[in-house]
Image 1 (cartoon, helix red, strand yellow):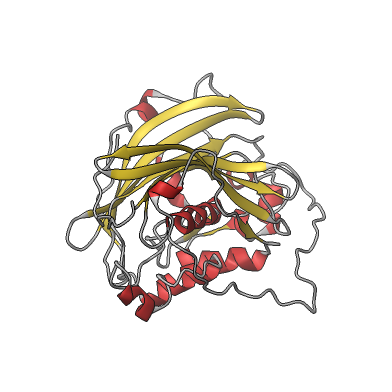
Image 2 (cartoon, one colour; image 1 turned 90 degrees about the vertical axis):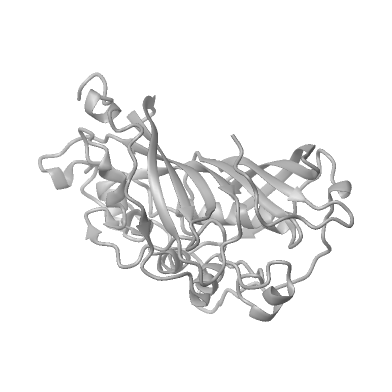
Length: 355
């Protein structure tokens, strides 16, 4: 392995952009429903056309953290849709782990919208982790709708790690020849996990909030491999570390299949959107993934208000958010910025990006 993985060839990729890619289909009511169903999010803005029509949005929304669905991606060694991680030439063949992202939500995304996305490489850097050298790749994804209007922007971080090399390229991350025993995740044979039902809660206003206020937790689990497969079907990402136990253990050195980072993002997003209420706006979300969760785990999304500030006449509330499993491990953390209406105020549906 060379002293540095960041070669001049790799550095030259910073600033490069991919061609714009329009999705194969518009966002459908079925897609919005499937995403909400897969994340067990009972928000009627995603599933109830009549409720959405009566809201300030006027029609059904797509969950904002899942506005792009991979449609029939090619199937490769790492699964379907994962080869996009490997546009950067590195001297090892390793899965690109989800390191986190920084989203800005600028407009609602509705069912019927056509989404186009484009990526720009913002940065590439190297760190040394417990498992050895790590390469971090930061790509900015910009999504526009059919009118060419930017609906959201996300700086996404993928982390690439080198594992011990084997004899063949396909075995480059082979760390074991035997499967380790894992527990079969709940539920028990005679148990059916019920879907949560929509409920109503009063709208919180900016005047109601002060530093230290805790957000109502969102609890998920026990999570099963069925949750993972259902999420893959909803968003089109069939990465093998989330459903293929032999691949996860024998080829990636993982203890078990792992809960998707994108699914965990949804749980934190649900926490923030619940806090904002239908009259509020989930404006920005930054998250870092620092640990792994597995089938059988119960994970809880929590948040606490860390600051309040009036900007341009609107009440911005910043919260520290985190995910923690039943073992007490904090596996994701970050911050969410929610705009809450003042008493008698109606918030706009279009927002300018922040620095």
